[in-house]
Image (tube, rainbow, N blue to C red; front, side, top):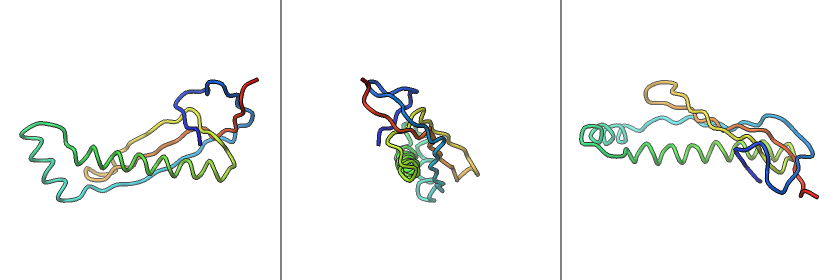
Length: 107
């Protein structure tokens, strides 16, 4: 599955558009991550626990979006974006969304 943040895929032509596809996941912060991150907030530096957790959540949201596109028989997703929303101070929702399309090699 080709996934692009752009409207076009170089060397390919969109021949069919299926519409919006979405993948989402919700993540709660673990208590141990909270304790470690609070310590890092005071001493400085990257909060690796959050960085790693969000990377995993983004990948899960993308895979769910791809699955939805595959169910539509699409072979690409264009205009892909992320949205991250805090539901509570310790819970976030990560959404990956884009337009499912079929593409073919340009003539």
